[in-house]
Length: 419
Image (cartoon, rainbow, N blue to C red; front, side, top):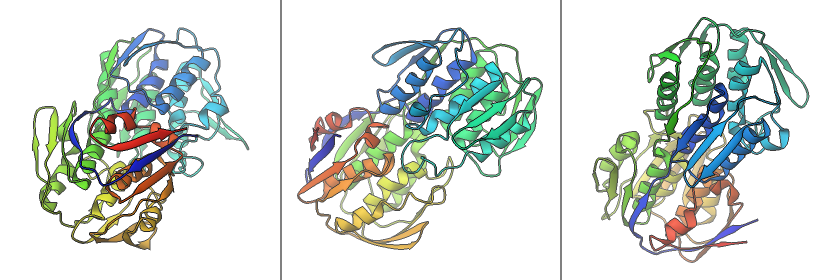
């Protein structure tokens, strides 16, 4: 198992290019199952979650050819209707393969999806199952797997009880090949959903209301395939902007879409983090001290839950008290115990809220990355801490951040990967 060794306290400088969006990539790969034609995916990041998705495609009978950031996938004939447990257990996004398989084959068998501690067995898939049932499928829940059957998926009206990105995408992909019209209400509106829906329409799907809470999908008999360029990763862009502010460094974040991190940039104005914006870049400037500011996570276009952990680290360096309110994942604040070990003044008010009093000097410690976003937050904490920080279980970080140690070294960070 590899780990990171970080010597903190160094100012960073330079520019860092944002990779393709993880949360777009892990949805377009399952979408390749909706057509028997070849899809070309560009700007594909080289991260662990993508490798796992491609392994599932290959196991299902797909042909995969990858050169650099370009990947071609074709599944002329799906050879099995089961997602292999040893692959699904590593990846929360394995559930995204269920809808396309059901639409193509009429039957699918799969285990509960895995992933990090936030995903493995703790995030329910009720909305997925309810949605499939609404479209006429029968769901059988066994001890070790789920089995879903549908001779013919039919359009339906479905209201998501809670806004869910993955459930919205799953139902949308399933409905494009269903018979009749499907109306989805209380949909998530993330940019990755918009990108996926626009691609499907280009291939013959009939989806209206894209980017709104209500989408209407008229099923078609067949989809073609084409080229899908993955949009820049807004979470990585926001993470790098927070890293710049936390280390009080002048960094230019390129190949991004500034409008996708508008909620963070508006907060930067309030806490006195200076920045300038270009068409596809954001440059964060050094500051004279930042102010504490409360956040409450919310679905897009609100403050992303995936930026909450890095922002929490930033608030340990801010003047005053801030309240971090996590509304989406119950366990996402548990990592703050590690920040407390490093010297942060953090009070856990309840499972959903912490109070941070700052600024505090952080001291390097031996840590373990519990999940993807907390892991990169530990890297940020290590970069601003005094002394050496050791981070184990960095597989979780590699799941979402491509070659992050080398890219940070290019900015002047003292970070090493040790096996």
